[in-house]
Image (cartoon, rainbow, N blue to C red; front, side, top):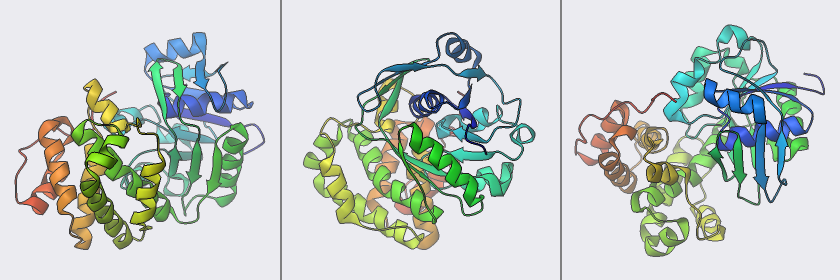
Length: 328
């Protein structure tokens, strides 16, 4: 990698669009990969960002429906619900030696991606940000922060450092983590209780942490125990303190998807949590109940593995739902 990178962004939505615009503004070549309709908008108008943290600006990007040349890195910023279909836009042969950097919720995707691409080039990432695509090519960045962790024990460290430096220079605080498992479970430990309960009750975080405090605390403690069993961090008190510090009106991405009638990442978050609990023999009755309730209300978020994990934990069959992984 040289000073100027060529970066593909698979899925220029809230996260991908923000990163694409920031990297382009910093002088890097950016290729956004999307459906043709979105690609036409991006070619004509670029990516328009509204952000109190980074300013309001428009950044020009290239756009295509498929990766057709090698790149230094491909950032995967689609949701799990669209992942399988979206990956068809990134043939392994075209990616070649480039890094594949998934910004995905959950903890199970690295293994699946390493089975499809060069294992030593898959470098999972975590981002902490509130950013929304309000229209094709239009991004609203609402949070006063944007923080990125890159990991990937098998990926070349020097290349991770170069990419991290490029992202950091573009705006978001960025670091390379040595422990991939710790990085992924640190986010999962915070995300799962937040996403599951705000979606289950259709309430913002402020109401959940006051009206459903006991349930939130129990779910945080279960998630921490599962994280610990998997080799990740476990600090329930810290997680609760972070929830208390967030603005009361904060909503989770899963909650926003539910409100819009979109498929939920229930399998990637709740299903993965229950499967990890099952593997390690960790009791998770609150998680199982909440996931089961959400699965009944939102059957498009259920696949067979989530159904089995929930049934094993509760003794109640949900009925067979559709596979979570749907097209864009």
